Image (cartoon, rainbow, N blue to C red; front, top):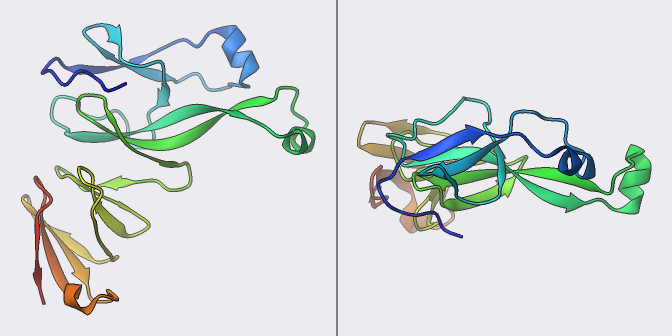
Length: 178
């Protein structure tokens, strides 16, 4: 379900998880949040704020939360972990837009990094456009200004893309300086 794209501000509110649900899914954390708009729950999804604190929902176009999904454990894992429950909540990194729409979901070991004030993110030094999914390049060397991100793309296998990519942080368009 997509969130309402109106100008009504999105809210991230702490919630209490039902004790039976906690028991069934082996939940120990107490810092879950959900997304609300106009006081109404957007979707029945548990999130947690990861690492750097709450996003600024009044100015951030995109933000990252940890999303939790139900996962049934195999008998082998249950025996190995000496678990009495067959369920567990698995965390996924999730990029959301300012309306609460989930744009991208990755596993818990692949944390996306959002380039500040842009539509660009990176995972494992690979840079992508959030809006389109377009892959820019793989690099560990970059510089940014208020309007542009400059990526050093000297090792691209496609020789027509080797150079410095100048990416517009607002719309994701780019040009190459070779």
